[in-house]
Length: 466
Image (tube, rainbow, N blue to C red; front, side, top):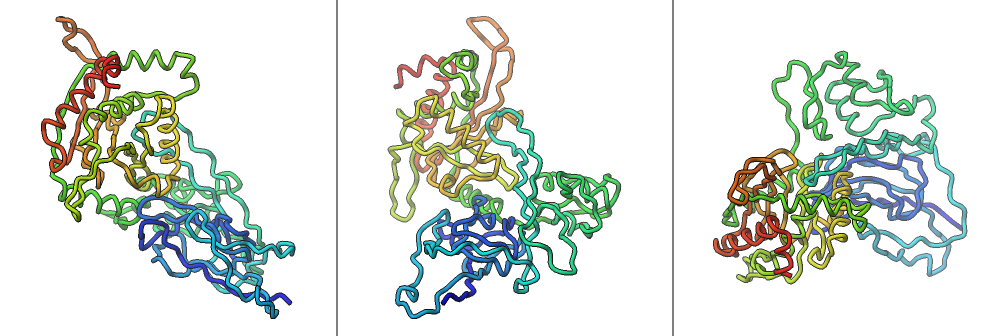
């Protein structure tokens, strides 16, 4: 005879000993029937947004936390009603075997041969925080450190909940978590707002128009999905420091006050590299590949590192050792709506230019969508940040913790330059190299920067360094 039981799912450690995560959005509601490893929520760790799969197959009976809530690891976030066996078979009494899934937590689905249960109504569910109708993540393009084609945001698709609304209650207005946060901050009842988005979705503009005819100022943080527009009369806006920004702040402070930074600059004529870029784009071999100045600079960095391995290392304070990496995990700094991230390309030194181009495209597209996996944010050995896409010429980048060097690329500008004993209009760029002076001497950093500049000033020099 079968019976049912209530199972709680507690927030797991999503990697590297993280102690808390923020609930970004629920993908299910109370009364929904879910399958093993079905995505039930998006949570934001200190490093990335992670899709959380279900460890059980059953019916959702309660959602214990609201979107936007920071939850400690080990606390219950959702309850399920699952089928059990109250018979006397010994096999039924054995605990379910655990198998790893996307977050290292899950259970083997026992094949009972029974059909899936129908979705239950919200009225029959246990009292709990109910989720809004499931909304797809807002695909807002984030500024990424690589020049890219403009990606227009897709319309937000909203799926109606599979379960009917509770008896005697109206359907919850369709909106996304950032819009609900804005409405809450402005004191707006979404039930009174008419949605102009697809399928009646309530947008930020709908909320602002409801309050003040659309004339409310929009804070840059709100555009990034991090803070609401300030209400009229407010002189300041406060945004809690959490998630990626909190992690980044702690890491940058630790790096700045632990590693003795030195920054050197080199301004050079990169016209030959830009001409090579144009030829590669026009060639049949690179048709369909996305090539940018960052692609060629990344390849040049990997070539120059072969003669300067001290820049591809880390300082092990605990063991008082210098750890030399015999591989290159190339980090690319990216500005996303949730803060700065530095995903890295594993074993980039083994890649051809075509492979590197593909990897860079995938990395930037994933970062722009906010889907970078935690594993891709760890293990970097040297990093590049492209400040030139913002029109900046030079800077003093802070080292990514655990790395010996970081290179900042400035904007490529046409300007008068000495060329063949004459003054000509050339394409010029400034490179800014920061390094850890415990690992890299001034001479070593200077020679690396000089070799890198030689490759970019004359790409043929790469043949002499391979």
